[in-house]
Length: 566
Image (cartoon, rainbow, N blue to C red):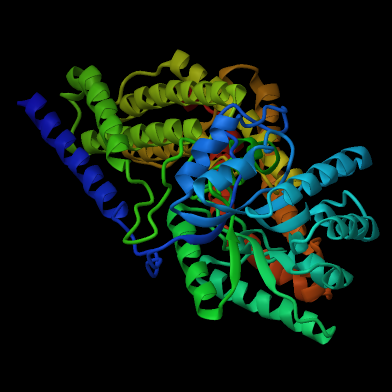
């Protein structure tokens, strides 16, 4: 009978979890469907898994051929960024598949390489006038500060004198406003408008309107100079995963909403656009973190990330995660079923709910870390972190049971918990201060620390229920080893985490306030500070991370007592 009772409540917990997952993973409205037909242009970088320009592992000709075959019925044109580096046969394959090209020449800070690239660009353009319709000399060179504007203008003039097609330079829109002389040199103005990356990030609800506003602003600037040149939105898109910036939240649904709304705005206003990008580029994670690798309309496996019509699932495979989490709780309950027979119903429910929460967190962590790992060492780190969280979950579940069942003290278990939490708190310190001082491209590692944070909250709940009082001192680990010295050491760690919380807030706020466009919009410090602080505190990922490390610090702030051995 007791076993039946346990199975009934296990079934109820699983059903509640499944209902919650089903409700939260319903397909979402993602805006107006894209009219049937092709997109105007897509950024094209045919780097596949294991290929990277950083490591000089360039695309193979067959990769370019296959990828253009995939894109031929999706876009009229592609934009390339380099003529060399494996991209040499692109024009031939574009002709084969009936795709036009907006061909780019990559410029950097090395004059010799720049001249080699320019020579190859001129040769390719002149050899393929039926395919290459426009040319872009350099991409965000001034933004990266690889050269000064006069040197760049020299390259633009060199190419213009050698080809017959229109020539431009591509950079973020504010660079054209900062260096308006570029508008006089190019045949068409190519601006990048990426609402996510703006110095003042734009929420998805206002992103398309922001693009429309910026195009008008640049056009007004050109008209004020007596120029009436075409404007190309050379890059615009939205990331499907990665770090939140202010109110700009990466997600599959938001990427879909942006692309659809961009096309709607462009069609309504007759704008010329190029969407970044055709395929996800894992190699970009080396410079831009997870978010840099997830701007594609298709995955690295050449599968669509989202549809251009209909409702959209943020996580279409959620039921697999539900199945794995369910399998885990069934396995754990089976292992504890004899012990749980004597546990009262309210305490049994608490145990099952906490176990289910840890199972869900573990499955979510494993899926997310593996999906956002793009190299061998990242995969190794993912395996290590899943293993560490699995170990901690097992220890926490045993501790939950001991507290809820009133079992005798278990010093070895408490010791293992102490050292496990010490590992996570030291790792959290490293990540927190890294975020504070250099966090622009770093994701907030919430998933990696959810289990330790939930574990602390679970211990508090079990202590309150098991002992009918809330005594945070029973969470403390100091008295297990080291006496007063250990106690002071642990409080030092907790203090460092507290300073880290302040450091992340200050670092994120300073990142906004130090940006060029932000300073132009808010030159007065007293005016800019509340705006920047608002972007920081509206960042749900950042706040979630701060809550995680606050929860982690609780046991190390507590005063050690003999209860810590229980």
